[in-house]
Image (cartoon, rainbow, N blue to C red; front, side, top):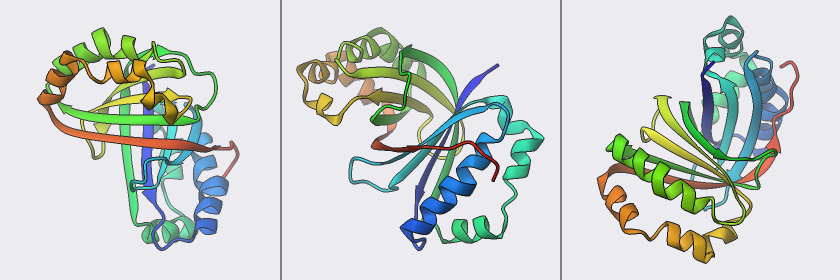
Amino acid sequence: MTEGLLYVLSEPGAVGDEEFHDWYDTEHGPARLSVPGIRAGYRYREGDGARPSWLAWYELELSALKTPEYERIRRRGPREQSVVDRLAVLDRRVYELVGTWGHCASPAPVVVAVGLSGDAAELERWYREEHVPMLLEVSGWRRIRRYRKLEGSGPDLLAFHEIDSTDLFRSPAYQRAVSTPWRTRAMALATARERRVFRYHNTVAAGSA
């Protein structure tokens, strides 16, 4: 079994908020949780003022994305096609888990998603040997998961952080973690970087679409 992450950024655009949320919460999200191997889904809204405004992420076994059940729900009905056609952004990415540290039993209030491309081996060594241990010393930094991109846009590597609050960014422990000489060298090797902060909106409810 290979653990994965389905990570989808969206921007409603011409779709009104009420229609957007009704479609996602009563049709689109529940359909995904009907697929065996897709265990949980969460919706988060931007917490950094950037766009796209919305993130939906699903914890799953990667094999679930190759099943007949998943292929079936990807065939859009008239309502879903109408919504998708009017979205300003629909950015779907699939990742494979390569490492996890810490523990988070419930949806975290805030997630920080940091994508990097570059010298993968050196970036991974810096994360594992220095950055992860230092971040987990920050009180309220719940869990860190590292992923490798399999499908979609964006940088090749993703660090997915679940934390209590954006207030942690002002803590001395966090400032130390992002101010080391090794971090400076690692960032100089990055050819692409994408950092987003999102706040918890809701948990995708199970049920038939």
